[in-house]
Length: 112
Image (cartoon, rainbow, N blue to C red; front, side, top):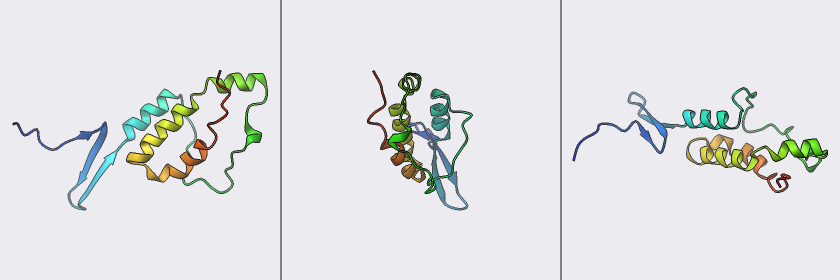
């Protein structure tokens, strides 16, 4: 058996150690960056979490015109929410409320 030293990654998450403060952190910044690139969201405006009370999604916002429906059929909404849930479970519990809000609107996405 060979000692490979301290682990630097586990399950694609980077391990960060702060000996002075006795902290061990799992970081998913690289994975989150990949998700943003995959869904062409690198330049989106960040929002604070949890979402403010003024942030609402409703049935009134669903696509109505054929052009809107065609556009939404190309959005990989379920994949986006699933990717966010992966980050939520492992290292980002602070996004739970925002992911929950998005998750409620996955039933009628006009996918054909």
